[in-house]
Figure (cartoon, rainbow, N blue to C red):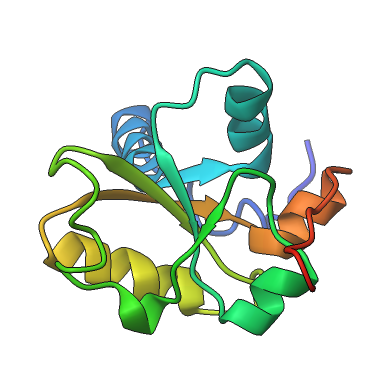
Amino acid sequence: MSLSAPSAVAAIPAAAPEEAAAHFARRLALETDCADVAAAFAGEDVDFVLLDVRGPNAFARGHVPGAINLPHARITEESLAAWPRDTLFVVYCAGPHCNGGDRGALRLARLGRRVKLMIGGITGWLDEGFALEKAAGG
């Protein structure tokens, strides 16, 4: 057995399994990923509304098929009136370099709506090999 210092990975002890389980369950309650969204749309098992919270020009250039464009700054009680209060919304933006998804999720949560963030956004969608759809005129 080596007496050398632990690796950078092991230098900080891992959380107890119970703590790790609670942490990851919490993350999954707040996030979903591109593959799960794509699978839901492919299987026609769509039990959520997918919101692209970027601006209309970005949406027109390319968005996840099935998404509705509702920029995060326009998320209000009035803009959500068409959906029942218990609707699950999934939001996304450009990608990890963008906080628009977080802003949209925060607005939805503050309005008492159920929400998850599609981690990765457009960048993640493309990295997974999925195609984008262009809006008419985009």
